[in-house]
Image (tube, rainbow, N blue to C red; front, side):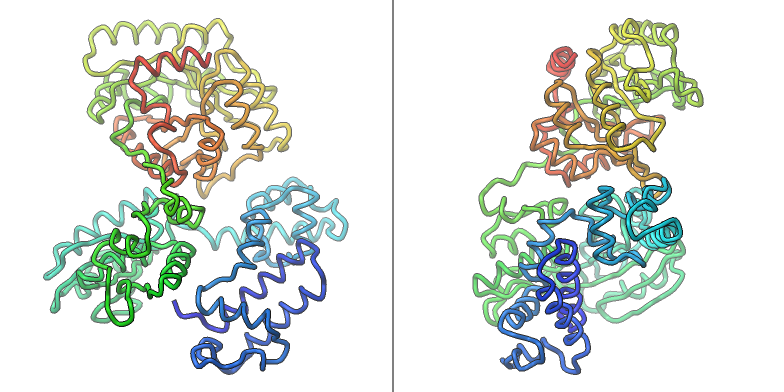
Length: 574
């Protein structure tokens, strides 16, 4: 990726902002701001100056230190000074700087005084009226911030992974029928299984004379053609989703797939490794001088850099390269590892099919057990179960289990966690169940301290098994409620209970970072469909993708256990 002056200026400006948030030396901050201005306004490309070996210290205000950083940025796309600052500050704090009206001083105040670290938390704080009390803000500023952050969030909207998958599947099938096309792969954030997708990056291998570019242009869903050439094209679908197509030769397919899968940070780290070995890495292959030594497969690219193949879901520059070097990459969980599903509903509450229909659908999915976990009575809109109706369903499950083959139904409930941390059903009703899933379905607006204590008290109930959709977020619709996830994870470990990764495409909750947190703390995660119909078991593949992004292996997932072992673990946890 060629580095332009604007890229260098942006990095220097970001360093200055982050240093100011840290209240670093003002002279150091000013040096970076001046450098950002000078480079941004420079009439010559710094990249070209570096390639010609020119002395950058001849530029006004650029000394040896800044000159070295500019060369580093040209070579790698980033610099270690910025990476250190990112490691020292909350991961999303930079996003706050992109909200109009917020400079580093205000961001620091919001972070230190209100523990606001993300744009979503900023919006919540403004809606709650908590910002106006801070020195230098006031009610009008709070209103302006709310308006600005809402506009910022709306611009950043992306398409949910499950929705993008629908567009991708039909488009891949269309392109695969093009003349001279071999492989068709969807790369980018889609292949990395990110929960939302900004666009579709599609890579094809094609022989000379292939009509794949013209075939993309003729696709029924294309609303606008942005560009078209012999090896690349960009279009916008009627849905608003942009599609970028790239055709490559077989010999470069692995290198191109690696490059276009990303992430950008992962690719930068790979290029740094290549330089350390005296090699050059780009989308066409790995080169020693002018000779291509790898590129046909991704495995060959990684091997040329002294690494094993790294799964796409891990390619976020979160330690995967160091783990690969040390031989510590996890063998990630796969869909075939799941033995059962611990969260499903029937028409007894808000589901669409009967007990038997859900059982047979789960069996067809390859599962050997399924927990039926209806809503409890507090969720009146879902016709939740009271103790009497729950007992009746348990008896129905017993009768059905006596006739079923190849699948066993477990007795459970998705019980509401009330505001005071108590559960919506009495212990006498919960005691006869195989598992109890606790869920927050109300009062998402509690303070961080109160929400956290609410959940911890619920987990202390002796019948509590599993925390459902632990952050309560709905993608693009509802932000996560504010809770201390590290305390919750550690309490689950101490208590002997588990966390859910809800695979519903609107949730994908746990977040990938929380999956890794649970893994590090030794807390097992259950990947559940939250099925309300027979078709919903297909969502488990989305949960698997999220789990893999969170570095989870089969051993880290509760419902990879066979039923006898699972029963022992559920009993021990209660």
